[in-house]
Length: 210
Image (cartoon, rainbow, N blue to C red; front, side, top):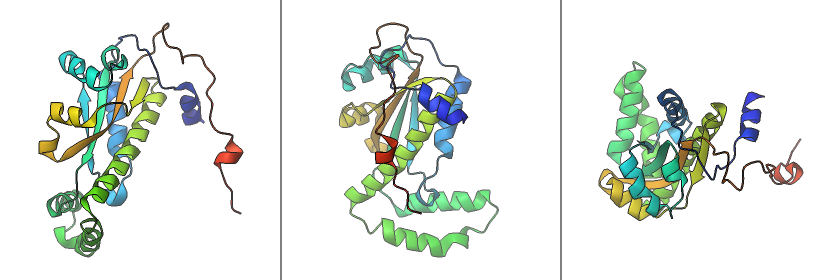
């Protein structure tokens, strides 16, 4: 299976060579994240694509000096909603119904049930829920990059609050969750390159109930 081969090929690249990823490939990776499934189709996160050198230089110390921030081509920053609101949920369903050529009130009953559930959560729990949805897009983007033979380094090692301040995310009701650095692996200087891919034994990972 092509996807399995791509996932065996990929690894968390530790050193990139500075080569730029073609814009078409970046857009395909972003589109994959855009098409990722989310709870009730709410897509409660955004993807910020950074290729600006000066901005990447400001992000690098926030990400503990990781070289892929600078040596990579692009950064995809996954930022989730800080909470659910009536306006956000209404906006998603209005757009959905409009695109499908349906009256806006088509989903009112379902939407009311959903709002009761989501808006009834403490804000901390709402934020945790939106973050989980962002990670679905994040994982989909990683797989898409592997299919395109674009190296990608998933990063949680950064100071979220500092990145949020730098990008003005709080004013937009967003919270950074993860960074995905895109680029191409360097031929030298990457201690992980060439090492065997290791996962937990499959028999300890999978439980079959027949």
